[in-house]
Image 1 (cartoon, helix red, strand yellow):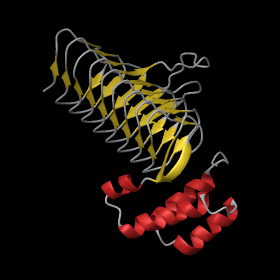
Image 2 (cartoon, one colour; image 1 turned 45 degrees about the vertical axis):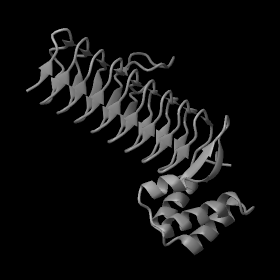
Image 3 (cartoon, helix red, strand yellow; image 1 turned 120 degrees about the horizontal axis):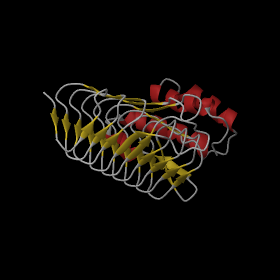
Image 4 (cartoon, one colour; image 1 turned 180 degrees about the horizontal axis):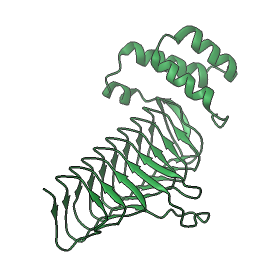
Length: 257
């Protein structure tokens, strides 16, 4: 049974699952799909022509999710926002739909977006990521899985951050960041491997050593990129995690330093 506070405005055409709690002074638009077990604590706005939200998501006060993108090219196209399951959107988080041409913003499962995080149009956020207070993702940013972005990190549009990366607070990410990397800086400098994060996620010593060796060969050996990748594949290619690292680099468009 759904519990909807009488002060909230839930459009008659909104599609609601079961066991949903909508607290005071919330607004749910006419084409929002809201999955089972979601909680809107208070003063939450969910809107958009194609906003689909999965199960067991929690929205804290003053979240604004699914509204029009902040993009001059946008001309009221029917764009989308797709949200998975078990995400937490803390106070004043804003998430915008896709932009011109029928774009899509997508958020996976199990993410924590802390207070005042902004996810712009056409971003793709994977699973089990932590975005700390005041993180800002520009348009068309891709964040893979198990990434941590420190407070006040800004990510420039059209960049990607690979799985298990860690970015220190107040950094500006203006380049693609490969999996397992750790870095910081007002113009991001990739410093090392996210060893603390890998230990917390239960990676073995052998895997951490292999990823560290691959990172050192690519970033610190003085080899050219092609030769570094060749040596990494020859010596460490049996590790799935190293293959994730090399696949990312090979797919990169040359923005990595």
